[in-house]
Length: 100
Image (cartoon, rainbow, N blue to C red; front, top):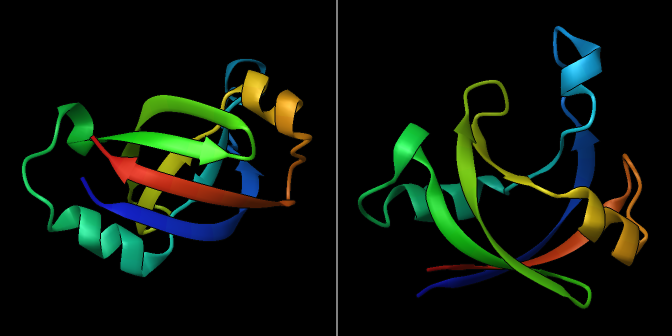
């Protein structure tokens, strides 16, 4: 299990259909973290990597996904975490991420 800590801005996915896509928020992983995950070994569906994440007092398990647009892995941040941690679009997130 490898662990990485970084700060990155929270951003909203701009979907073609804003009705269904506007509620998805992500953090882009720094390129050096993405490179390490890329080398870590076999991936799951859609090239995803299973991770455990801490932002503030919130901890959860999810997957990070490769994004061709961002040219790095992206971490989805669910609404419950955004609300609990007071995260806003464009604001910084301090992330601790561990592969599982």
